[in-house]
Length: 102
Image (cartoon, rainbow, N blue to C red; front, top):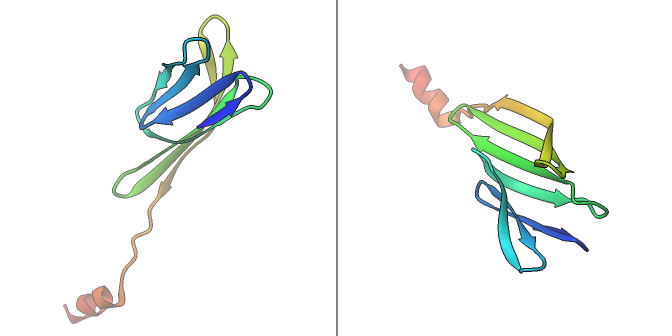
């Protein structure tokens, strides 16, 4: 969760939400396919950055997006980082010994 004098923004699982300060009700801004790891709200405007992370068996993925307010469509999204990385398999000494015996 993050806030500035005009806005409160937070996330739950794969959804970014804001709080309507007049009604004190939560409002969904966006749902994404991956779990959200963090959101950071700008102190002087309603723009924010979201960080999403996901992992698969052999890779991990991170995506960082800048969300800029747009009075017509809610928010425009600008991807800052979109990266897949191979996970390295750690082989223990026990596994190496077993492989040597074969």
